[in-house]
Length: 339
Image (cartoon, rainbow, N blue to C red; front, side, top):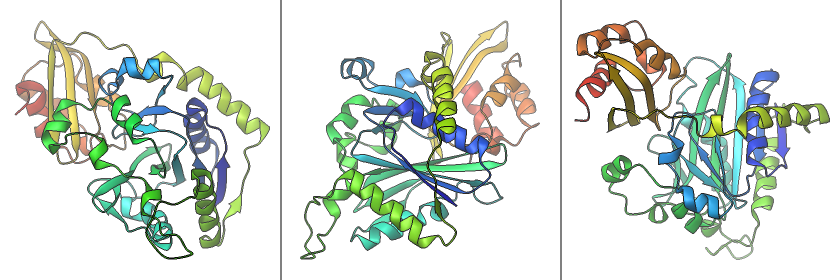
């Protein structure tokens, strides 16, 4: 296993680094890294509807889309990110217990009662400090997560504008009431009393690095080479820093329906012309092994009828694209709208 401390704070470089590593290395990898003020949106999300555009622009906050599904998150230098990359095998996707175990054990050693809760969150005393997401690409799998150590919670609240469907379904009043920082729950080793930790986020990241190094017998440190960094910068310039990747052109949709399921929000936008589906996009904070663009292409030019949509969807395993969703549920959402 290769252990990497990526000391870049540039969001576009760091997202490009994940793609570069998953595509160009055969070894198992753990990378630790931080972003300066950034909103990171999920692969399947409609960026404009997830952020406060004016606040983000006025405060110089970066916006970047990642390779994985799930919801939008805010990163600052008080947040530590971890990325795990390995060969994909059956049963790993959506196995958050497996991928978060090392982090949870590490935090337990610091006196932090971290537990895996819900779909993909790590929590302390009912409050979230870590969101996790996954993707599968060319036979390799990536799991990554945030670790809020000393983040500015007010920026999280103001930069993100959650979809109203998610707010109503969870009865959430604000982002602030549901998140917490790890540093607020750490015990000082000297007196074993619970108080705010004086440790910095960078020191916390280095401790986590040492923990991985000590607990994986085959772990070895790896520094990104000049050639690695040049290739990552090129990918960042050509993809991750572009408007096309991070926002994309969204047509004016005539039909817009959404529904919150147990596995996430699914938001369907499409035009219907002469009784056929056109310009289709499926947004949401769901997860899936395969690209949702294949479903969008599959349903384009299909007649806007339940039986026609159902017949088209019967040709694929929809769960590969939207984990947990059935073809019947998507058909009903597309043709009949929100229920």
